[in-house]
Length: 477
Image 1 (cartoon, rainbow, N blue to C red):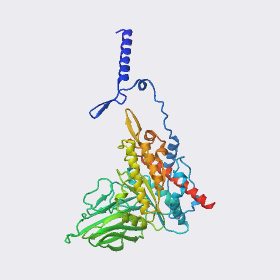
Image 2: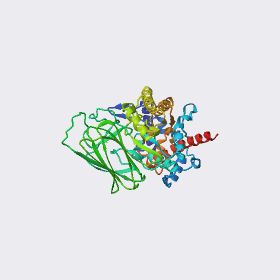
Image 3: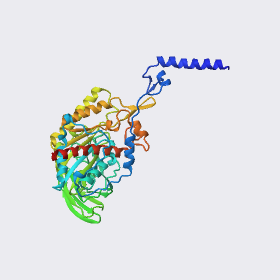
Image 4: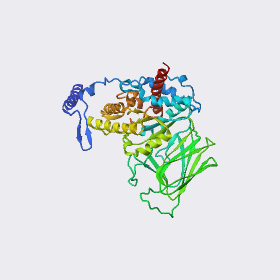
């Protein structure tokens, strides 16, 4: 074949491709479950002019954090000595710059220097915070700077491993949650502050119980990074008396019981050996619903990790408000951090659906504020999340609108909002986090890597402490 014929053949092929690209639908042709695309002339002959998100500064910070060790201190330091390098310009957002919505929380931690006691921060979220991710860094920073020990209140049974505490079990333990697929055997809505409870005997929906069966079970909590000197058991809803023994190391430190009834029972135990395991033995003709075990100290800040895989955060109105308020009061909860939105992003299909979600989320915030008016609330919106568009990963189209409706709901309810999406770099930032070396996010283009989770935690903590320092300054003037 001559050079002329080869050239004509190549030109003919290019012409055919050009004609096909002109008539081929931009959105492709759907055949069954598959959609076939054909590149446009612009895609064939031009390079993308989109500006790539620059997170090089964040990567440098992550490198420095990788070598940073934080040691918890039970002594409260002078808040005036707090020095935080500002990591990002992404600060907390407030309606009409009304920073006073956080003053209740700031007043509480400020009082620790003169009146020793406990202040609690509860971090609710979806799978982004599973295994104590993000929360653990907040806990260490708060406890280092304001005092406190222990991982906080934890469920007996978790669906995943946590770095906060290890567990060993004996008995037929099961976990029941108000989020996800609810077990139909549970006919009530008393789930407690962790939105879940654990049992070692079958759920009883009848006042008649088989007296011939004795149930026994135990759980052992083994301290890891967070030693503790208090063990407080929150339980209720048992038809028969349940006897309890608490062993610290090898020493029996307390014997107690949970009496029949649906109300909340709290058993408080002081421990002598902070770094030794704590074993709780249960024995009786029924099991109580155990709402959580608080592994803590007597002073400082407690930070709880409460992940709810698959949840959109619209579960609080489905819970017994009286029990929730009672637990918040006994735990002295002063700040709620609600980190949600990511689970609705892949499935929401219209701006109207986004608006409906915003209204539902506002109902949750309003419910919490009504039940517990003095609590401060911070909402952390979704991170950037990517879907595959042909050969590229791009931000889900309605993600910014989900962010906007969450922010609007937060402002309406009297809370503060932290925009994780913008903190990451905004639209199409997730692929850059995935491509970072080492990676800051996983290849599902949704979840952070441990390194990325720590960076997000540091940025958020920096934003919160920035507001605390403004509050401190305003009190001196």
